[in-house]
Length: 84
Image (cartoon, rainbow, N blue to C red; front, side, top):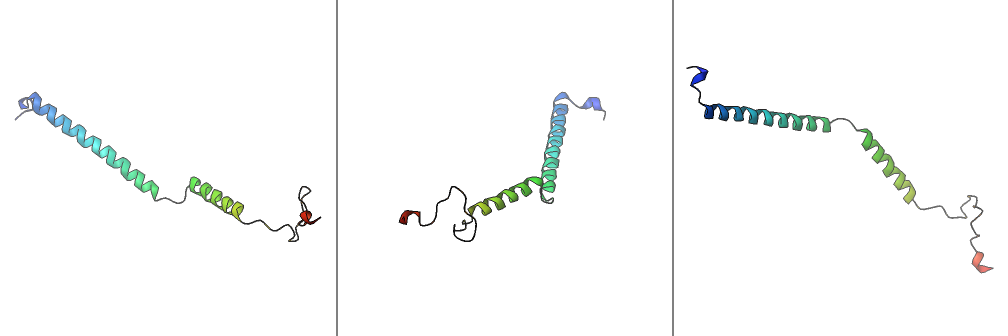
């Protein structure tokens, strides 16, 4: 049997199957690469997000009372300003 014996409808069906298999293999390759790259070590973005989280935690810590030995800023009043 030679290739001439394949009618045009069968040739179209076989070429569509080949294109479909190639398309699915490309999608499978992309999914495989995405999963493989997701398992890598910590990325730069994750490091920056961790740094931002630590800065937010530092900002949310309660402030030291004014009379705790720290020097007072020029714009701060004394603790008992309202008693005078």
